Image (cartoon, rainbow, N blue to C red; front, side, top):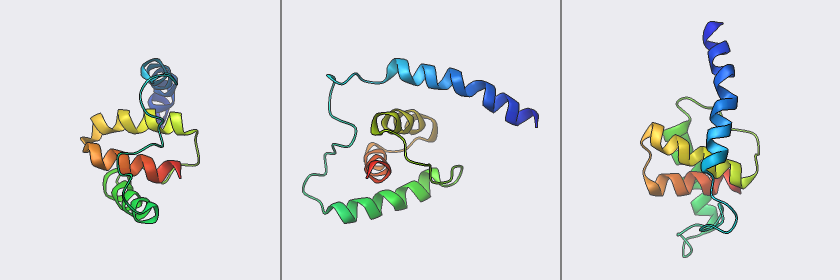
Length: 98
């Protein structure tokens, strides 16, 4: 019970911190744009789902749909915490925003 309270209390802090470091619309690529432009989108989605299960599924269930920008911020944050490679991060981001 105490752990749940601590987690719930930390969510607003985490969201505000992530919001502060999120790229603005004029910065960089759109969250759904990937560097895998020559790959099959269906294959990328399947690979992204596999990488989500391998990296994120250990602690998280598949999330409900969020706006792509919010997903990109969350994935970038979790990349650091879970030591996910850049390619894995991009595949998971593609999977979660499609």
